[in-house]
Image (cartoon, rainbow, N blue to C red; front, top):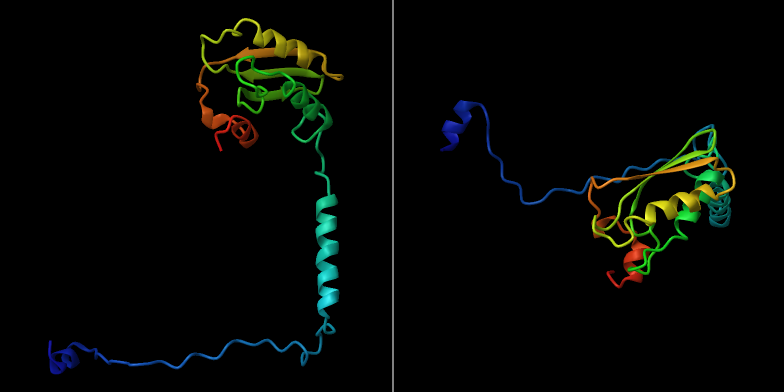
Length: 169
């Protein structure tokens, strides 16, 4: 297309070899009437350290005993981490066999779990052991175990700790 045809269509093409860099935006707080006093690097570091310590010291608000992060819930998880698969030297929680831990306000626990395969040698005894161990946690009134096969267990459900223990990381 020629320059004349471009002009008739209402636009032109201009070739540019370089462009000046635009100036950086600057905010001058010292000349504003409400400007805070200048903060030294040491003061800034101390402020950040105080913020971080306060953040790490915070506890979740309104966490009930039976909710994740609550004392009773964590006690049940601890009991589950004490149960090991006899064929694999990893606890059943880190192995990914526990699909759900539901605690009621009355202290009833419902554990949803699976096994590595339906033909697992401990298929008859493992759910009973889970029920006994969870039922022995102080604060648990009754424990029920639901053994499910859907979704099926696979190694992707294992925690990083379990993978490290088994040399899979």
